[in-house]
Image 1 (cartoon, rainbow, N blue to C red):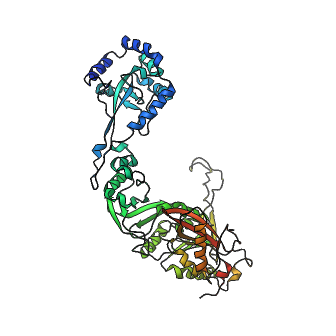
Image 2: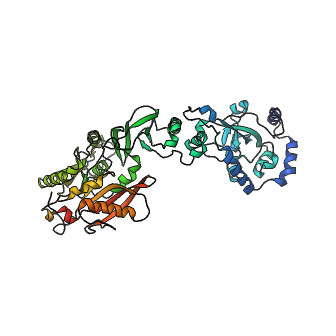
Image 3: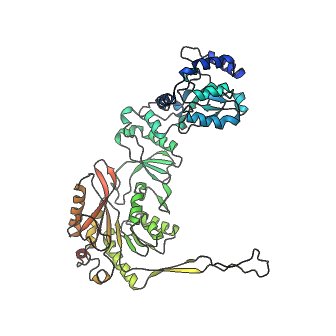
Length: 534
């Protein structure tokens, strides 16, 4: 923020300003000034009037300079400098700064703008070096127009505790927000859909720019890089996810920053390291990951059929949930294994690299076999400290050392059945549900009513029409019916034992103007689970 002499009135010459300011510095409390103030006090604006003027004027000076760039032009940050003429209350003594800050804020005469401190050094270098401070005033207060000075300012002048001086506030490129800056450089017709939301994976911002923004892609990326300190790389997707790879990876171009997609990020108290160019990761799905994980209970078994790098599996493992986690992508499997060790959930989470169609039955059979062998996880941890009498110093006669914490052992036997199947491959996961046919063939005794164990819940993600009516639900149920070979219908599901054939559909997020991602949850029908395998 810099101060330079500014105009008192549009009709006056700039040359008058230094002279008047010099007079104020030499004799800030001239009686002639008081005379003008007293004569004009009857015209002092009300608090409401000041507030209204402030709101209208502030909106104009908070807009950045218009810097329209042609397609492909480089971002010139120097062009975003803007000078704003304000008034400031020059405080005579540091002892009264806090007082005047409070009363000027109450009277709404102090400048109140996000990211601009109202307390600044005096613009005169000599006085500033002496520690003199100023309080910036809202734009409706004019240094050259005493009629705009409210009662608080007038009283301060009368007490010889402040003067009103011109102040030039300089706002540089760093002040403006990303949206401010983009509105400044982009044509008006592109303002309605300015890129503001994007996926973030560690230090990487992942854009999916529409065609109309591609001529300005470099500028948009530079602005995002500048305005987000944690972002070091900005990329743009150049094809649809999965268009060239069944593993949901994509082709990209680096628009700004380093060409480094080896990222680290945290979600649900777990750390993930991966190469973003080789695996699938979507930070916008964190809420959905958390929602599904909330269904899992300690000691249950989850089969994560399309596990990726473990956004469901790792947090579940930390909840003492057994997870058979599978992904067909060798790179995802590699990261999954490493992240299991990194997050110390290897006792509960087992990685696999198989085709999901076969893995559903494979996991079911392996879990049953392992349970029958008595597999379990035993965790030993320190218990609470025992209360004991002890002296202050070990050298004191009769010192009794504090006993060691007793150890507590927790045992988690591996159940014979799976409680949840997670199938997060929305483009095709529904086509995999046919593999549930016969997974518990001849194993009816493992479930209710013989035991208290219900059949597994299946959480399958899918895409469908974006709509507020029943059409997406009906479409999803029809597809489930087709591949399960069992009639499914929309309805509320009982997460314990009943609700056979009913599907609860949760709208996860919109992915396109007419397309949404959903999660269909249903309890596996007995007729499917106990059927003869093909």
